[in-house]
Length: 126
Image (cartoon, rainbow, N blue to C red; front, side, top):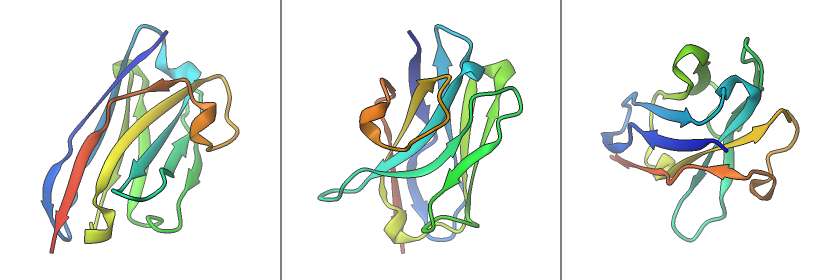
């Protein structure tokens, strides 16, 4: 009932600061908690950051590996959630996905999320 499209990825030099976008259509996006996941080749999908469903959009979670470098935010007027990525490292290379869950602010298990974008590739060069 909501469609998600990620954008903003690409080839980035180490230390760069791209911003990823997750644009939604179909329903009011403020009613959905959103999680940014990432998956590198041969590795398990992991949660990176999460934001609660609400007009204020408070943070729910930030992974230790990106804490202090990545920031999640949302613009409800544009039905968009962002992931600002700073000080990128080669180990940040992965496909980044956004996923949404209707009026539920608990949990980061990918199996609990019904709505997914197709992902955007982020490649960090040294």
